[in-house]
Length: 455
Image (cartoon, rainbow, N blue to C red; front, side, top):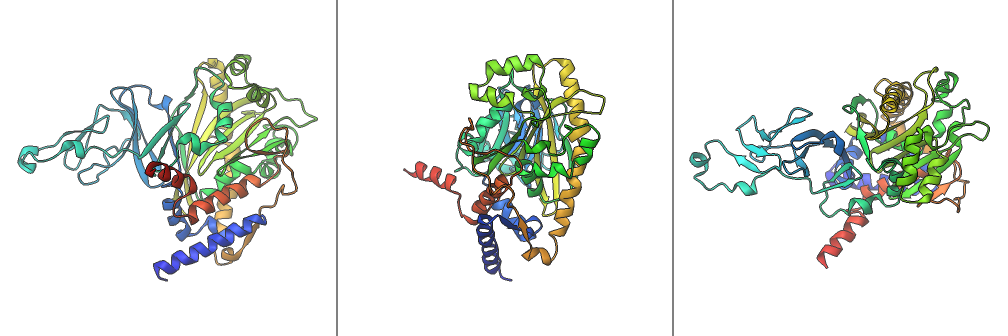
């Protein structure tokens, strides 16, 4: 089929999906389609903010990590003056990747192909045989490493966007920033990453885990039923139902779950008294404190592929319920392969005993081989396999869970909150945002910014 015909067919499928979402249904083919995947790299990942790292991973000048937005590799480095930079990991001479170690410390980067040398700010500072080869005509200032078009930081979380006309990160986050504050502002000292991020590859489409985290508390009833039987989760298979399902706008969303009505669980996720006192002093509003007080589990996704999980679990049946915080990136590798990046974070000034226990809880439950993680991965892989064939191209999925619910007008935070976390409103909103990016030549937020610049 001709390229124009392929684009026309894709647009037809996307419009059909957009209409289906209004009825609460979605096409299975979007979870394993090579043409859709290639379009996503251009229309989703080249236009949205991608999470790269946390400031605490590069605390000193010269510290760097290598991170990715889809296929693009970036050096995230703190330069000699302490400024954080995000530099495309390719020599400006012939495109050879400069940095092949995933993390380290360096004052400069030397290309292994021809020896061009760049400092930590990305400036070209050395060219072998420069006088002989270029006759003194090479403009070094024009050939430094290419920075990411937009780099912004929110409470230590480093994001980049490949679209220079994208809105600011704060605009992009919208109401989701209010909920991020629940995690990032518990302490004036902020968060820190402990250890290197865990990484592994799952045979799944990236959207499935992103949607699972933004919307699917319902799966805990079946997928994680064994965890309830083992005593690693609250003793009610429906424990994830009791909470709020919050649409935060622009495809972002989360679930906030409290204790089941017949089970006593500690407030504030079960954090130790030191952290509770700290959040009561540092949260930006009394509403934040009240939401935190009645929260035991929080799950969500920042569109498109950064998920957050702040939950209270047991690392083993003999341990006390312990809160842990992880953020994870679902990096797309192919229509049916995703590289998972999972960071463990904790308050910098938390007691050392708590940091150790929280980290162990993370490893045992949601680390690379964590018991909850393996349950989820098995399901995502199965859905991806089923979406591969001919039947899947016309197979509609039911996303109507919770469509009977009405918003709670008393909810104190931004967005639209439904009074039950067994709902798929967030998944429908996620896919509506996905369709908008996939169909529009330039999403509305970018167009607004371009218009402001021209005026």
